[in-house]
Amino acid sequence: MPTHLENETELVAEARAGSAEAFTTLVNQYDRNIYRLALNITGNPEDAEDVLQETFLKAYTNLGRFEGHSRFYTWLVRIGVNESLMKLRRRHADRWVSLDAPVETDEQETLPREVEDWGENPEQQYARRELADILAEELRKLDPAFRTVIVLRDMENFSTEETAALLNLSVPAVKSRLLRARLKIRERLNKYFKRG
Amino acid sequence: MNCQEVVRWLTDYLDGELDATLLETLEAHLRDCDDCRIVVDTTRKTIELYCRCEPLPLPPGVRERLDAALARRLSQRGA
Image (cartoon, rainbow over the protein chains, first blue to last red):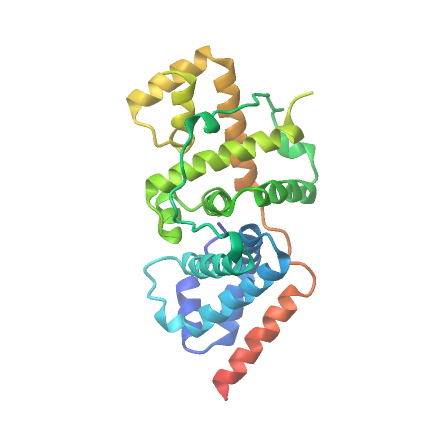
C-alpha cells in the first residue's frame, strides 16, 4: 500500500471544491499502484490503462460521494477492483467464473507437492525489474479468483477483513483462497529460487 | 498436529492470527518436520517478495493519456 499523504484530507477537500492541482497531487501519489493493481487483475496492459483512466475519472466525478470513512486510497482501490473485474468479465464472458462462486477446497490438492528449500535472500538473485516480471508472470497464471486476493492482501497489504469487504466475500472465503493462492505461487516460484 | 493440519492453518500462522494453543502445537510440529518447515519458510518468503515489490514506473505514454482524459473531464465541468 502506498504511503498515506499527510495532508490527504485537505487535498481531498480542495479537490472536491474544484482544485485540479489538489486532484493531480492525489493522482501522482497513487497512479502507479492503481495501474499495477489493474494489470495484475486483468493481466492485460490495454485493460489496465483503461481501468487506470476510468478509476481516476470516476473518482473525480464522484468525489462528492466520498464520505471519508475509509482512506481515499481504499476508496480508489474499490473503484479500480470493480473496473478491473468488469474488464475481466467482458474479455472472458465465455468462461467467466464469478468471484463469489464457492471454491471447492480439496485438501489433497492443497498439499504441497514440491518441497525444496530456497536461498536466504531470494530477491537478491534477480534485478528489480526482472524480479517484478517473474512475480507478475506467475501471478497472471493463477485463476482470477485466486490472484485477486493475492493482489489485495499481499501486494497492497490490505487486511483479510478489508480484502473480504473489497471483494464482497466472506472472511473464510478470502482465507481459503489466500491459502491456495499462496501455495500455488510458492510452488511455481520454486524453479527460480530453489537452492542449487 | 500432522502435516495436513499445518497446511490448513498455514495462512493464519503466517498472518499471526493463530491462538496460543494452536500456535504452540504447530511450532512443535515444525521443530520435528523438515518438509513443513521448508513449506512454511518458502511461503513466508513468497509473501515477502510480493509485499516488498514496489510498483514500477508507468509505461511510456500512459500518464500523458491519463492527464489528457482528466483535462477533458475538467474542461467539461468548467464549461
